[in-house]
Amino acid sequence: MKYIVALQNKVDMLQAKALSTLTKKEGQNTVEYVLMLVVVVGVAVLVGGLIKSFMPEFWENIKAKILGGANSL
Image (cartoon, rainbow, N blue to C red):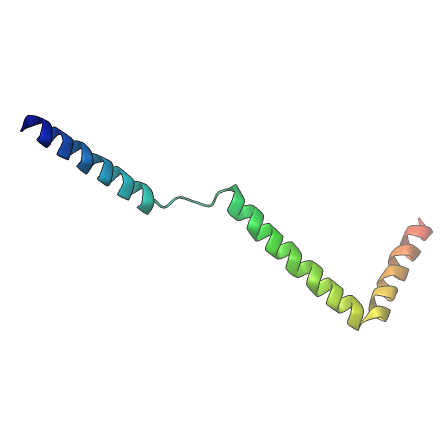
C-alpha cells in the first residue's frame, strides 16, 4: 500500500509540473522577434514597390536630388 501511495504522489507531482509548464507565460523569444521583423520588412518592401510602380517620377526626383547633392560635395 505504501508503494501505491508513493507512486500516486509521483504521478500527481508530474501532472502538476506538466500543467505548470504548459501554462507558464514568458516574454518573447528570438523566433518571435525575427518573425515580427520579417513581417515589418515584408510590408515595407511591398509598400515601397507599390509606391514605386504608381509614382515613378516621384522616385526619379528623389534620385536626382540625392545624386545632385552627392555631386555638389
